[in-house]
Length: 68
Image 1: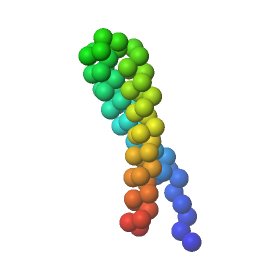
Image 2: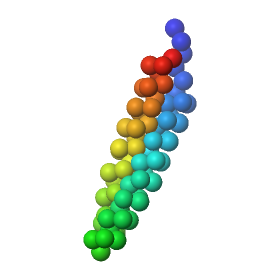
Image 3: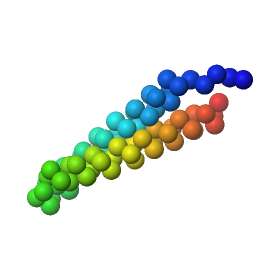
C-alpha cells in the first residue's frame, strides 16, 4: 500500500484557497466600485472566493490521485 502524502494535499488546498481569495478580492472590488459599496462587496467576494478556491484545490488533488 502506498503511503499518502498529506503535504501535497495541504499545498493544493492552500493554493486553491489563495487563488480563490485573489479572484474574490478582484471581483469584490470591481462590483463594489460599480455599486458604490466597496466594503460589503469586498467581504462578499472574499467570503465566496475562498470556499470556491478550496474546492478547486481539492479537485486538483483528486485529479493528481487519479493520474497516479
